[in-house]
Length: 184
Image (cartoon, rainbow, N blue to C red; front, side):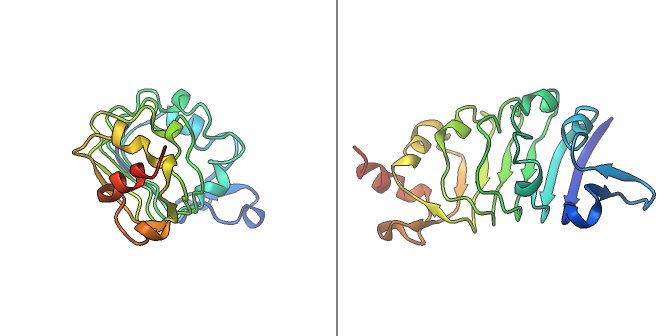
């Protein structure tokens, strides 16, 4: 099955009150949170535009190694746009971009990210045009010096640093040189 756009908005409510199920459009249909979503379910579809917002995915499938080995269920997907904004995401899995060669835009805005570990960005898709990191709590230090080496110069990196003071509330990309100069 090919899906041009898949949107999951306000999907993962408090599992204690929902018996670990997601209520689908039809109230008689329930999708179990664990075991089926998203690994097995996404393996059955082809999605081009994936949007998951206000879903607290950090609390459901970015923990307990549920996103580990994501290439197993993303193989064959042709996702061009991934919107994971407003999800309380604190960390990104190392294999996040594996098998997402067609990805052009990733929105990670308004999460709880403090760092951008280089391991996550080892396999950056060559076609990546835009990374939106606005509304996170990014500490721009030497751990970000990989950006200049790995991110295509034409790729738009949108977001601001909250620390250190020298780059506080300033855009990340224009300040990479200043950040890198302070690294040994």
